[in-house]
Image: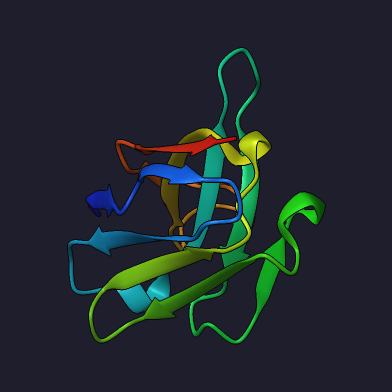
Length: 121
């Protein structure tokens, strides 16, 4: 069982930066692939970034490439999402999620409660 708690969201102006953190409970964090997702009002949830168990492999959705960076610190049981050059269309609730070895790759079985990111123009 893994519990995920996001933090770092807030209100920022266009072009600003935020760093989201997701702290995980449990002693097996390094065995979980992690992902960041977001959901804007009236839209479906979408994947923003993914990171492998070791952090050696990452994926970004096209709209955030070059602006967002996902990283993890397995010693601290934490995954991060550094968001730079923020745009109004980045406004959403951001969720982190964990994919345990028990589920198929790309599927996530644990979710955080979400943190609001609002980018004002």
